[in-house]
Image 1 (cartoon, helix red, strand yellow):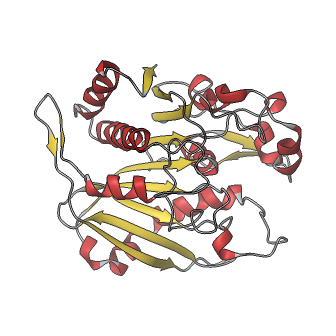
Image 2 (cartoon, helix red, strand yellow):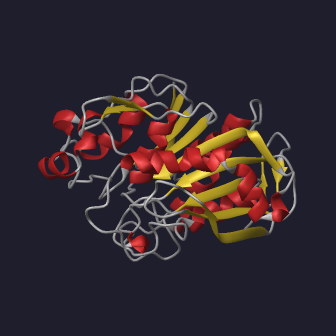
Image 3 (tube, rainbow, N blue to C red):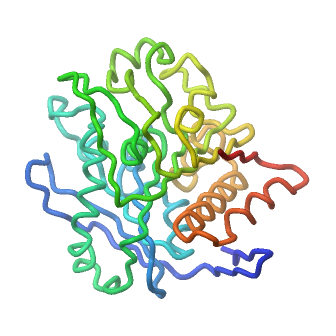
Length: 319
């Protein structure tokens, strides 16, 4: 992994990464205790926190703390504490189909992230190498696919609980930035029939109150026909339908895997492209660095580098 250097002179060399799993947090009332992977550079202090929510997909282990290594490794090597929970929707848990919240456990997923923030002391105790190194005032959330839905709720998106008709607000004010990767868009007539029937919580998604700054990443070939009739534009809804400040990274020729962010050499990635994954790594890291450290030049520099290349992999717009 090469050193990342910016025109303004900011240089962040990749550090060796310490990764510990499972870190298990007792979770009374949850079907099972909450298992985490914790990744961080072996040196450095004042590490911002990134909570990373996995998607679903077809693989048995990517939808767990064992997935998304291309992102978790890169972010940790460049100065973040990355915490990855295994949500109740994970195939690895093999929970009974009648477990409350099944199959996707949309509410529990967001609650997992807030539980982690509530228990950072326990995380530091379980991983002594982190003691005194965590900047709890700088917290972001990121997620891919269903994980993007989870992240959007923590950033302020709302929905109507299909079971009781109440408005759900799971926003966590401790989270001050986010990255949504191939996240679901609006509900209503944008949903394909089977999605509306099988995942009714998607039917009422409302981004109008999602005010926390975020980067939305979407592939312009991500049709997601099993979920939406809108085509690739559906995945830009979290940007288009939410108030600023927001940025949108549109990746050219990218499908739902965004080149392969969910794991190294993943068979289910339909658009495997190491250069695209590298762009996602750099741009998401740069966005989070600048969002959590206002004035840092990383985001501007990476956007300029993306636009100035001879064969750009995507484009960025902001509001």
